[in-house]
Structure formats: structure tokens, C-alpha cells
Amino acid sequence: MTWSNVPDGPPHDIRLMDTGPAMLSVRYIPPEPILRNGEVTGYVIRYTRVGSGVSQMITVGGGSTNGLRTSVIPGLMAFTNYSVQVAAVNVNGTGPFSDVVYGVSRQDRPATAPRSLTVDIVRSTSVTLSWMPPDTPNGIIIQYEVQYSVNSTTSLVNFTDTLMGTVERLLPGTIYTLQIRAYTRVGAGPFSGMITLMTLPPLPEPVSDVSVPTQSISSSMITIDWMEPNASNGDITHYTVFYLPVSDLCDANMTSNGRKRQLAQDGEFAMNFTETSGTLTNLNGSVTYRIQVSAIALYNGTELVGDRSSAEFIATLEGAPSVPQSLVGVYMTNTSIFLSWKRPDPPHGQIINYTISYTSEAYDDDDDDDGAGILTNPTIISAASDATLYYLLTGLRPGTQYQISVIASTSLGLGPAAEVTAMTSSNNVPCSMFETSNDDCGGVIAGFSTALVIALVVVVISVVLNVILFAKLRKKTSFTPPKYPGQSYHEMKESGTLKDSTLTMHHLTQKMPEPTYDLIDSGQKSHNNIKMTTNPAYDISTTVKMEDNPAYSLSGNKAVESDYM
Image (cartoon, rainbow, N blue to C red; front, side, top):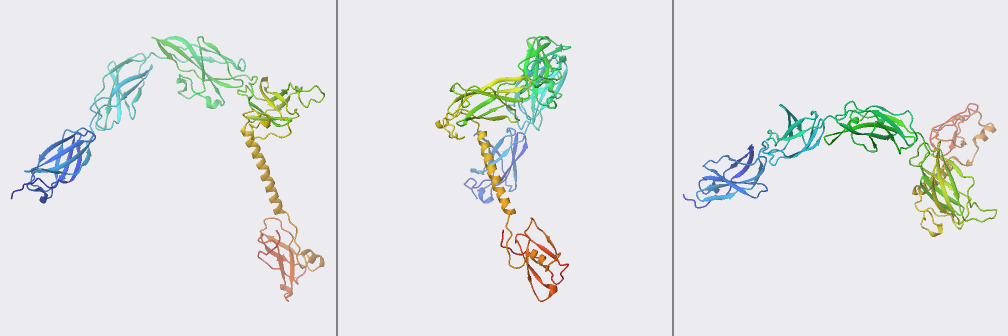
């Protein structure tokens, strides 16, 4: 029988396996016999590196077998994604290709070395390097290995998940050669080219015998001195004194590596001195400072910064305070002005009081100046613990502009004055706290503290809520005893009907009014009932003991009703 057509169907059940770093194995089953149109003489495998857009094909032998076949695609790139299709071939040509399947070739050693090995920082005993990944990694880079050599000694150091590393424990003033290579899980790639460098000479040793006085010169100055380091390893050009204000000596103690910090940290200050002593200036009063000293030497044009000395601590003396902050004045009525301000910063010590004074140029010469003019006895108020302070000036003249000053004081004296100008209202209508731009408010000073408004609102709300709560509590605990028909407990006792009776009530949550009882004659003297009426809000268990009058007994153990409260 002669067949004149190419196969009508492709192979099926295509599978890819990574059998090697540069190859993929393709497994497939030939087309169904009815679709072959004769004997299958071979197979065409088309493969494409994903993203390249370029396809390649290989032809493998056929045969009459109907079972699973395996073919190998050689010459692939390691750790690369490929798409693969398979077609059957007979004497008439190549049939249709199968659907696309995808596979990734196996990882291999890096084919190239890391790129752009650069020396970033050179120190006396360490060097910091940076680099770029290989162009052909052939897999996932899991680590980099730096090889460094001096004379005939070679050492290795590894770095993972980084493109930067520091080689440590080097010898000062020594020439080294370095190179780097990359690793995948299969193994190491080639080394990069070598670079040569020389480490810096040893750093100056820390200065010794740093001496600080037991007491500072003043509230703003401290003088310290120290000894030269035992080994400078260069020409010392100057010394740097680092000083840091601290609030807690426990937090200020240096850690083991803190002395090696060569730059000023956050909040720290530094001053340079050419001699082995110096005076720190512009300090804040009544503040403890941590002090350290470092020697700086010059070697072949390179500046060598030595380690810091051990930390020393000293507190400055208390001084006069600085000016109070954020002084604001706003009129409240036509005869009063409200002031607010914040504590001086820096305070230079413990603020003990504030002195408030004011003056006005516009006043009459009559005997009653309505509070205008210079205040002969300035007001002195104690310093509060709060950061913001308030004061109300009263007895002022309506429609008058005042120059107001506030001065803070420590035990060392007065500081500079904070000043503000404010004007009272010309009428007797209080200024609204919320109308800072209203012309009728007599020009309220801009920037009045919003915190004051919120505080006043909170106070008002708190007072209202407390009044309401008090009224409710009073209502619950106040009542007028109701009148009941029949004879009351007291009437029964006074008339002799009920004597020395003992009434025990349990489960009361608050004091109750005295209950009353109605005697109902049931015809049996030993079992007469008493109807007890009281507040239904109480769950009452009553026990009535009749000691002197056995003709009656009270029994009950239930909640009873009432029409009051």
C-alpha cells in the first residue's frame, strides 16, 4: 500500500527533563498508527530560548516502535528557559508540530567572573570592596569568595546575598592582592583579575589621662586636658573633642565598640584643638555632658583618625535662663488680657518663677488711671511643671494698648524678657475665643494657643457632666415615704399589737424606707398573714419573728410591689 501524505497528527504526551547543565531530554509518544500515513522515519524537534525569538531544530531517527521515545537536545545554555515542539516525519515529509511545552536547563558553574571589583574604603586593618554579578552566572549565585594574598600567604573570605563586603584582620601598612569569584550550587566560577592595594599604617592610639574638673567654669564652659597617645603612627595634626548632652548617665555609657566611632553621632557636637587641652563653649547650663577625645594624624597625605578615649562626664553650673518661648497676649474683656507662654529653651537650670510686668503710654493724669501706666510692683508667679503657662492680667483700662513682658528666673537670677503687645477691648463685650480675626475683638494677637481653647471646653464639659451625675444620684437616694392604708408597723408596735418584733431583710442593695403591713385575719391565730408592700426594685426575703405576741406570725419570701420611686 502506498501512502501519499505526511503524518496527520503529532506525537503526544511531550515531557521535558533537565538531564544536564547544557541539555534537555524530550520524552514523547509517536502519533497514533492511523495518523502516521505510513512508517515514521524520524522526528523533528524545534526548540527556542524563551525571549530570544530564534528557533533551532534537530532531527532524530524514527522507527516502527509505538512506545515511549526519548531524545536529547544538546548545546543549550545552562539555567535557561526553553520552549519545545515535536513533529513526526515519513517519506512524504514532516507532519504537524505538537503543542508547546516549556523546560529549564540545569544550573552550572558560573561561566564568567564577577565584574567591576572596586576598592571603596581602605583602613589600617580592613578594606571594603564592591562588585557586580557575572555576565553569565549559569544559575543562582549563592555566594562570592574573595581571595587576598600577602607574600606567599593566601586567605579566603565568603560573602552571601550582597555585592559589598569588608575584608578584616589585615596588617597595617601592607600590600595585598585581591580577586573574587562567584558560586552556584554546582560550584565556583573563574576568578576575576587581581587588584593591588596597600593598607594604611596603624591609627593613633587613644589619648590617655583625659581630665575634666569636678566643676565646670560656668554654666556655658568646660575646660579639659589630656595626654598625647603613646603611639601616633604619624604626625598628629590636631585633637577632636566629642561632647554629648545626656539626661541619663546609664544610657550614656559607651558600648564596647563605641570608642571606635570616629564621626559625631546624632545630637553630638565636636570641637578641634591643636594642643592637649581645650575649652568647650556655648554649653547649656545645668546639663551633664559625656566627653571623649580622639587624636588625628597625617600619613603620606592621608588623615588617620584614632579611636576615642574612655568617656568622662561633667555637669555645667546652673545659669540664668533664656527667654520664655511663644508669648501670646489676647484680651478677655475690656479690662483684662490673657497671657500664655512656654518655658525657656534651654532653661539653664530649674525655673523657679516668672515675673510679669506691663506698661502703657496712653493714660490720663487724673488720680484714677484705671490700671494704665507702669506696674510699680511686677507680678511674680511660681513656675509650673507644665511646659505651657498662663496668666490673666486684670484691672486694665478699656481700649488701651499694653506692652507686656515675661521674665523667667532660676536661682542664679533673671533671664531676658519675652515681650508682646496686646490691647484691651473698647467695650464690655468679652472677646470670643474662636473669633481671632474679628475686628470687634480689638485685634486679637495671632497665634493664640489652640490648646487653651480645647482645655477650656474640656473643663466646661466636665463640670456639666458632674452636675448631671450628681442630680441623678441624689434622685436615686432621695424619696418621700408613701402612705399606705391600714396600720403601720410603728402604729402596731405602739398600740401593743406587735411588740419587740425582729425583721430581717436580705439582699438589699441600698437603704429602704420602713415597710408597712396589713393584718389579714384568716381565722387561725397562729397563721395570720401580713401583706408587705415595698419597692419592686428590691429582691426581699423577709423573716418576721413574733416573740411577745404568738397570736400572729408573719410569713413571706418573695418580691412585693410598690408604687413609689
